[in-house]
Length: 211
Ligand SMILES: Cc1ncc(COP(=O)(O)OP(=O)(O)O)c(N)n1
Ligand SMILES: Cc1nc(C(=O)O)sc1CCOP(=O)(O)O
Ligand SMILES: [Mg+2]
Image (cartoon, rainbow, N blue to C red; front, top):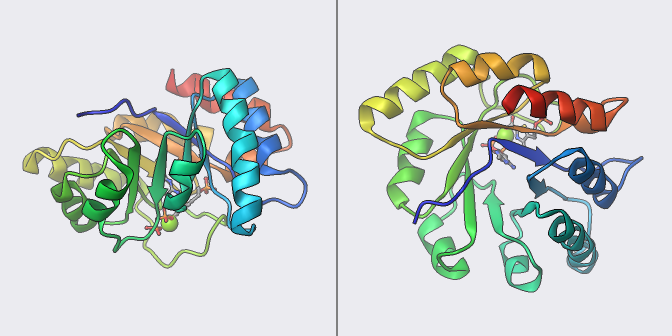
């Protein structure tokens, strides 16, 4: 079954000055319909506690909530899916574990990654990057830039691979129009919003470009 996948994935991040819950509230108030809770700084217990608070907020706003990596938390909180960052994950097994209804996202850097993930038939969308330089996580992968997405989308077209591609990594409002022209389904953004002086305004600027 094909699932709805947003064109704008907002990702929380570990920040000194703002909790993930506060980031989610800002995003929801700014119009987020899809949030990925991407937290790597907590124990399992703290993670679940914050996840439940975030899930309540998302439920109130009708926002889809995806968690990064912690597949086991899917059954413990009111969340709609998981994004797996491990490129070599066994997506068929993960799909069996989470059942057919939850959204499953995967990460890719190359067309070969995309081919392999799409062939599993288990994944609903692919976050593909990095588009540009990101300080959000260490990254050894080559930057794709606009030309990289253009080439990947063209090859996918030839191979008739129809899975939604979400561009990620170093994306700002200034890149959205050009990325959309490359044929990607949407974008995932973290630092350009979270590290902005005015996250709500940064969020809305990107939102307006996409809608
Ligand atoms: C929507 C979305 N896309 C990508 C990621 C993370 O991807 P990442 O793990 O960085 O991919 P690799 O660089 O490791 O291939 C995400 N969390 N969400
Ligand atoms: C989780 C993740 N992976 C990335 C990669 O480039 O592989 S960028 C990223 C987080 C989003 O990036 P930003 O903070 O630059 O918007
Ligand atoms: Mg990456």
